[in-house]
Length: 419
Image 1 (cartoon, rainbow, N blue to C red):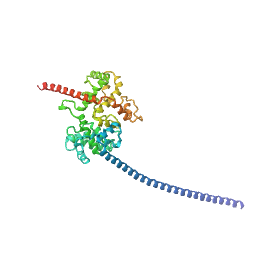
Image 2: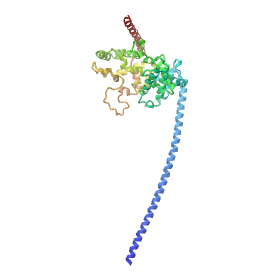
Image 3: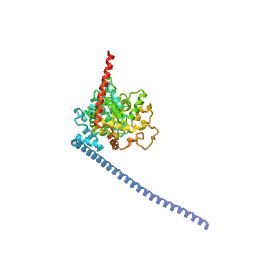
Image 4: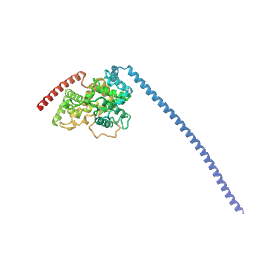
């Protein structure tokens, strides 16, 4: 009987111990659950605090941005009233331009003795930008404009597909086409207008800058896009003039290269003068149509346009001469008759070596090394390139004489044929 009682006592003790352990376990779980609830509550409070702070920061950031925009606008308005064209040109010439003020500085510098019809306001631009739907001819131009929008500065912020700058660019191009009944639109204008859109504070300012570059008597850049006289010449008259001048500069300053290139052209039964006559259309048309904007990074072209607004098309020739100096050894190493000389890609500032690493960290591995330097250094080098101002004037006069002789020859050729 005593053994049975002892066995029962052991069983009861084990049972009570199990109950005790379960109670302790449940108490620990309650404590853990309570701590977890407190942690969750604390985390929720932290999230609420962070959310509230984020809202405050957003409001503050918005206010700060609005204040910054307001300050910039005040600075632009103030600048508009106190800055003279001469002061604006001095700022551009010295390379002292602040990006946010560049549009106003360009406009002020361009608007010395500007034609009245270029002083277009926002409300006028909206009406002009509706151009392009009144006839089949207008619709054809409009289709070309829209196609070229997708090719303009595609790697630049704002100009990517769906970018904020593209609607502005379209409005500016349509407005310009409505104002120029002789030319309307030619491919390449998108790059010039794109540069204006990049720096302008409004659509109207972008249009005024574009129109001034095109129509201002000192620049008359629209002549680059012009058609040939009476259907007899190539067209692009100003581009042809600049190409002819560039050939004369190369003959004077790099005679060995000019001779080498002309021998190749002769062997290929092409017209002599790598940039003259028909050759300009293949070799340097992009340089002169877009003032290098379609073949160099926009960040560098902003500085080229700064100088162009001050000095005019002489800047395009100097940048072209810088290109020629950089490529001289490479071109002289090519044998006479090598068709690589006639490859536009070789001249358009890109390396001819296709073995570069396209996954390189370099922002543009195909860009020639000279154009990877600091923009100010590049422009300082270009400033040292020919032609001088006097040389530019003499070349322009020589070209006009050359052109008159060419027209006389054409007239003499046409008269016997008419007989």
